[in-house]
Image 1 (spheres, rainbow, N blue to C red):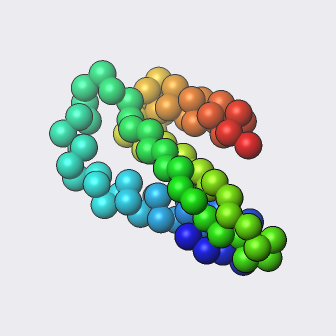
Image 2: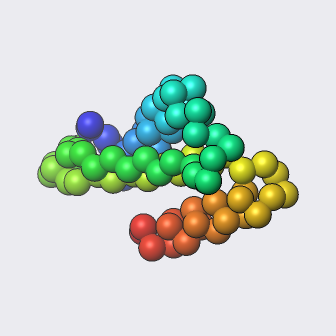
Length: 89
């Protein structure tokens, strides 16, 4: 992956991983209703920062949850995602 600014690189990687998660959704929806709250996708890949002219390691995490709005499952999934974001940066 090549990007001009770090913000653009983050956004591109975030969009691509989210798209891949959505594309695979019908395959993992068979787990819905089980004791699994969701899936965590994580990718690590090399990237080229064009401005700094150096290779870096790019990472992105995507959490897909399926708890219904207002349920404890949804709240736990949201709390986990919030905690994960806090330590990821």
